[in-house]
Image (cartoon, rainbow, N blue to C red; front, side, top):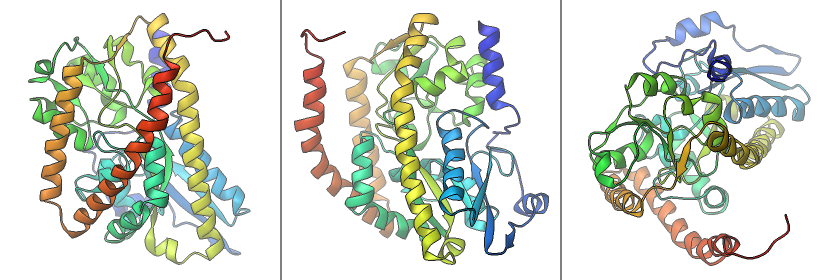
Length: 377
């Protein structure tokens, strides 16, 4: 079974060069791939992604997004998808779209914390929004407006294009019994969540998704988070770590993004612009639905078939992460630039409005559904 799982995992990683440090010069990339064709009013664009080729959910979701744009535009705009490492390294999509190496990119905004400290807001921040809350902020709470203002500085237009829902806290080689167990613990955790981990004495080791298995296996990291049961099962993490914790405080509703080169986007006719917008929203709903449906069976396979210990962290760990998250977010706000402060204000204002109704309705219902009562099988 291990051999079968390893073969399956390798199939998804085959051909994907995911090393974040790999140097792929834009000039070399563009010389290897011809300029997108423009004939008889038809265009072919390139979409780079951070995902291994064929990876269920995020990877195949990006491919479906590209197909949807082609169909809705009746072939006026076709999009060729490149997996991580095929045109640019896994974590270089932002730069590729910004400099025009590719017209589009699909990944998570928090991968680009080095570009601007506020990019994680458009994926997820610690103890932030659930998936429905995130969509509410972007579409009706001013989130898209501040996002546009931030990304315009880099020549990019951003769209929500997927959500993986609440992610897992991750995989651990050893049991976590208290917050003290995080002292000196080496964990793969990107974004602001990594800054929170440091507050508890942890060590952040950021590697692309395709390198997590080897890092856990070799002991380069003691723990790692990726997405959730659906993808974690595919990657075979259960073979090298048996302790699996959730929920992930760092990503309660992780949004994915479609980045479009702004100059290219602005030059499009209005109907194609609208198609990209609508296709991105459809992709958001599509990917979230896939994760919601597939995570449950995958979790059952992990626990029942592979003997994974899936558990909730002790309350003192979650409280420690909550306190540390508050400290990190306060520090981030204090050092934010003008647009960063505007994003903070927008996000926190929406959070104050969203949390009470979520607590009164959604959270209350989930608590009620967990009560002991008779229901049909």
